[in-house]
Length: 337
Image (cartoon, rainbow, N blue to C red; front, side, top):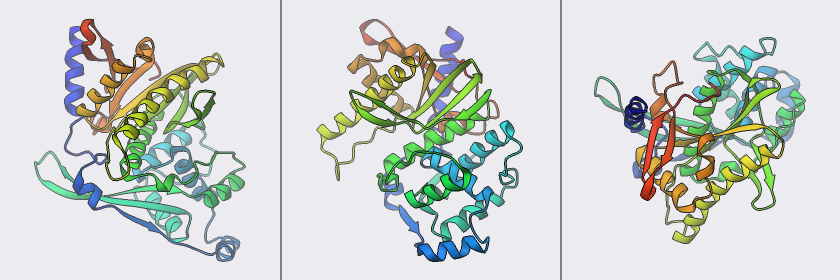
């Protein structure tokens, strides 16, 4: 356990990595910009009839974004890479070509299929040079998702007006999608799931992403949910923020109940912004108490822990609570990787 505790300290330090794209500061929030190209429906039909838009490979890009909710180009490529490895017969764009997915995203945005959220973040790399990075996150609208569902004969549920989420939530959602897509490439991936469930206590709830992994008949369902607990006084009261935090706890609890009721093994990965966010969420778990018996199937990680890692199996934390509610974290390889 001592070695795992030491590794846990390393992971917590990595969570604060200065090359992270998914973080929230005043500078990032002030740089936020949105882009959407409105194209009339009949013009979309005309371009589709001439095969200018709507190729199957484009629809798989739309499918990736619809499944993840909000994602950057790298996450989309990881999502598609896992799907392509599992089903090489699918007409998916060449994700190993670093430019092709980016070009198709630009085309889809210019043709009114995607909504782009853009902000600038200052990143420090190994050479200790700080430079600005433009980050683009993509979401899909209801009409575009309906088109994709028709084209691929799929039934991905619509997360209505996800485009309207505050930037803080979108960044957290994208971070969870980033981790989820990397896990899909590092496990015995079976399929992507809807990430939506219903319960009597909280109604309809979403997780950022959900995958099914392992072997059929002995599979595990893995959901990804962001922490990113930021109080924003411009649209939240302190009471509303507290309710929002408790809702996150209830989503986790009810997700487990949902899968348990179907006799399905389940895990939850909480994706945190940094070590401070990790501790905020851990204290929330302790103060509410309802997840203390579920810690054996909850893992913590973040973008910083996975940066530049080809093997992500040693990038996850488990939480333990000792006497006087002392919180500790230790490294643990998830049983789904």
